[in-house]
Length: 154
Image 1 (tube, helix red, strand yellow):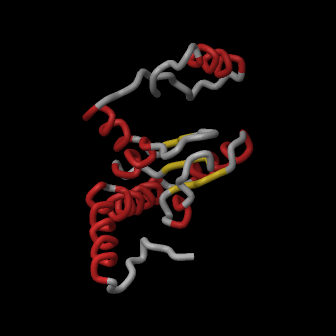
Image 2 (image 1 turned 45 degrees about the vertical axis):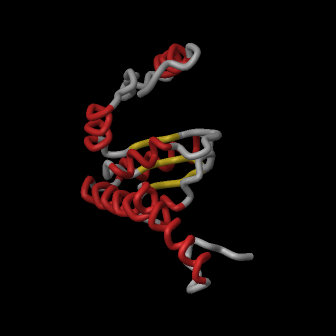
């Protein structure tokens, strides 16, 4: 799902046809409420990337309560430790293994993972959570009180 980038969609469609992949569809990008609804209705969100500085769409999937598979080209290494997804090496084998594991899970397990992802998103990723952390840092700097956990000194 998303925009066609420099003809890449046609290349992917050819590959899917050659490999006889019948459970794949190519959809245009969604925005606003349509995007939120699609993320909320998904059982799983997959974000295979070789290099992404943040992957905002991962945060959007977590906010929607959808578990995520992301490659380690994006900085989402806490997905497995938070119990809301997989953070895997890039490549066919790691991706196919993660997909097989996810698709073998009961729906209730995936929903539970999605709920943990939503909580993590609310605690750590939302702007309000980031603002609270910054306020704690500024208070610490101003008062020399107890150092907040977000400040790591080496």
